[in-house]
Amino acid sequence: DIQLQSAVLDQSDFRSCFLRGGDFRASSMRGARFSHADIRNADFSPLFFEANGQKQASPCDLSESNMRYANCSGGRYKMAKFMNADLSYADFSNADLTDADFTGVKMDGTKFSGAKIEGAKFDGEPPSVE
Image (cartoon, rainbow, N blue to C red; front, side):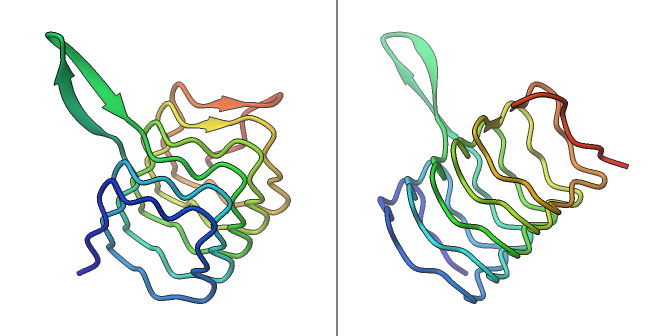
């Protein structure tokens, strides 16, 4: 199993890699390349911690990443930051995208069927999940 919680993987190259079921919680992957990668059922959700008596979240940052044609189905991306990423033709079917930020994202042909998008931010209308 791939265990990379809280890792700094900015600008990393994961093109065509098999990362299925990997644990990337709270990792920073700004500008990383995931095109054609198999990241089904991977966990990109936040880690929670207490600071000064307050519950805090450390979300996963995928801003400016290239995820063209990546298979992200069934993944957990709660609160993930995708700002200005290229998600063209990626498959997020049945993924948990609750409260994720998709502002400035390129989504030509991206699949969201069955995905949870409650609270997610999109430029304009949210995509169809049917």
